[in-house]
Image (cartoon, rainbow, N blue to C red):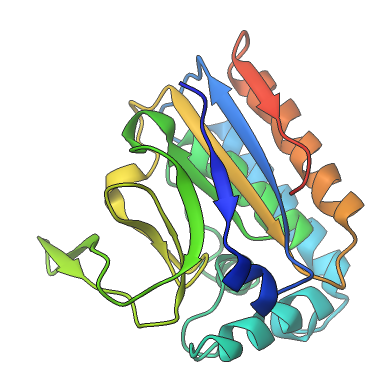
Length: 230
């Protein structure tokens, strides 16, 4: 099956400087976090600190652009940070970056090092085409609260990633649903690297190339396709 990704005209109008690189990977080998992926995360935190030069993550121009877009669709960016800013804040704290599993560690390292929101979805759990749209408010978002599965609905006008079944990620790249997240059993994945102006498209391409190389390193023989920015 060929995966289709589309960005709606409404989202393009909201964020004309938006670009994304999609990476499809099949034949992956996932598993628990390792010394290798932990070292990647530690190095990413060091690269982030050098990049920021003492500034807070939200003071970076790319993160400021994401905050402006979040505000434009009705979210409160200081309370619901985009995934890159949230990870960067963790990376600079005493707690440090979480260790989740090998694949998640790898893409989180790229997100932190480049200060770019990066998401990973299990290709085998995606139903039909993936679309970045402004929600009607009636879409289903299946998540877990207090240990129990529950269904939420995005706010009307909120930017969401969705497939044919429902929302896979709320508030653009804030919270991923458990249905499509990468687990230790995942062998096929879709990675999305997302940027806004003023970040040059060449920079998100560079981050995508680095992610592809790391996937090849940790899953020798995986079939990896990097799609041009769209």
